[in-house]
Length: 110
Image (cartoon, rainbow, N blue to C red; front, top):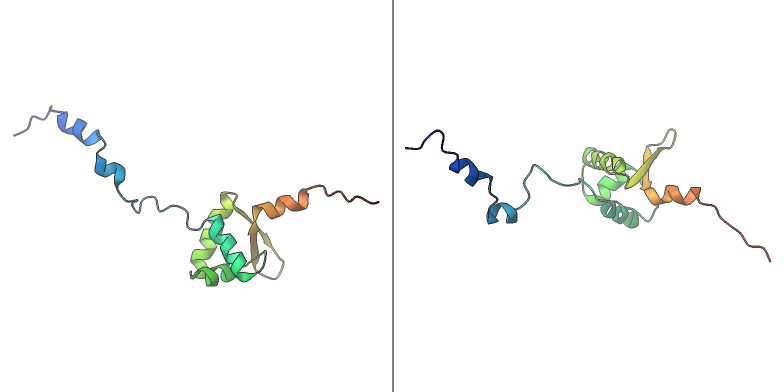
């Protein structure tokens, strides 16, 4: 029988164990749905600098909804950007492409 005021059990639970440290990741923190590297690999496979969510989904073997959600999440972290191209679907591109168009370009004439 244990004493209700005995907090040694609570202290034991609070201590990390070797199993806790080496445990596999749980479903609580699945990580990013898509990395910027995966997105760039899809662009490389497509041979184009921009892509729609449908193209990314098809290239990476995901559903359109999964790819769209993953692209939205990646855009929130700044890894990629998006633009609406009028009547066509939204296209996605690496964030550094946006910085490229903002740079000053110098042309030297002889």
